[in-house]
Image (cartoon, rainbow, N blue to C red; front, side, top):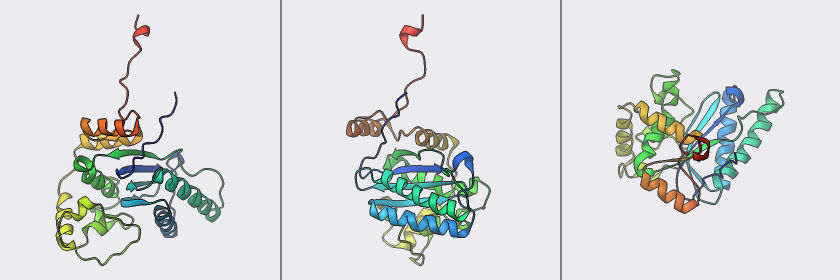
Length: 233
């Protein structure tokens, strides 16, 4: 079956996942995380991608980002993937692939799913039982969103306008953002995020999906399973 073209409408956020091949380790040291962050920042700027949220786990990466040029996310991920694989293979004297095929992604309805998806990303280390609270995990964007003063700085972090609307001052934004993490994300919502991302579809209501289909000319919902009518008899 032919592979659907990437969804990459300008100005619409995407949830992105890239995993290590066979879930193998992609980050084996602090230096690896630093190198990946550096090149992600470089290529995000080069290909005009705003990175709003991230988490770098030992064997996979989650990003929440908005492309501001055509195919910006694909170009960013391709350049980043090649650069990091060269570094990783050289550092650990290995050869071959590191990533599990193409990265996975889905476009997101901002009003309905942006904060849910951002929380999903930043809570990843908690779900993996690595930490008890997202503030304790260094390689995620949570500390930037939750800081009550702009003490932490990062060229990578481009907060979304929805986050900026949480308050006029950073302290107000941080407190309201922290409050979002008092509630668990329902399993049903987790399932929707995972399903849309792994199938490269759209995450949102019917109106949003219809708008994306009209904008891109591409199907954004999975086809219903079942045999074709001619095969049913």
